[in-house]
Length: 220
Image (cartoon, rainbow, N blue to C red; front, side, top):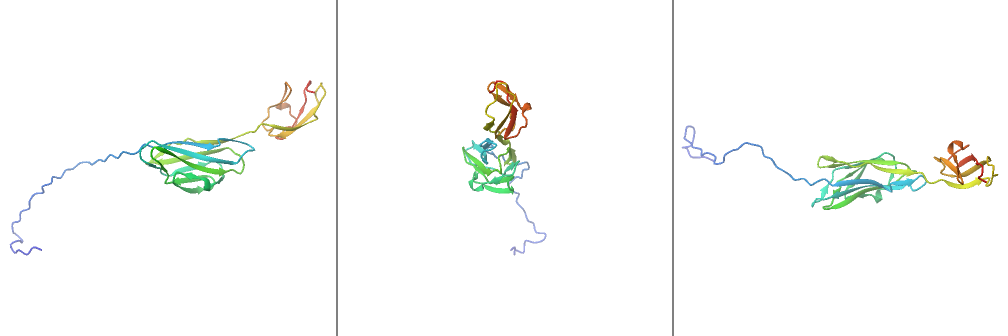
């Protein structure tokens, strides 16, 4: 408190100037951000037969060339066909799996790619039946989005299997109706009798498990 009576209204008070000079301008701060990791995406296996396994896995592999770990933003994964996720076998790069739409849309949060290393986000799943599957993914990184190729799982038709031919023999003149039974005949384009082919247009009838065709001459 000021108690000196000589200090009051009208008293001469001198204020020393501020020794610091104020400057105006723009302050900029440069921050070196780590380069984004590279990423690949694929299904394992990439193809399955129509009567084959119904288990597969979608995997994204990240490679970090920086000397420090790289934290990813949300990793969003969208499948085109519903399935059952085997979450117990999932690999998440240390992140947390969030299910947005069961069987279709997932988010992996807080994943980290180690320094000078790789890590894989893998989601194993089971299909009700073999089917073509695609997966589209987005990865947030430092307020931008990494480009991730669309992965595809394709179903391949197995080779036709013949279980019986009735009758087993025909005359050398041919012309007799032959019934061929088996499986995986869908998409068949011809039946070969030795070196002679009968085209699908001449099958009567034709299904995935049976073909009826007239035997050509010389096929006895």
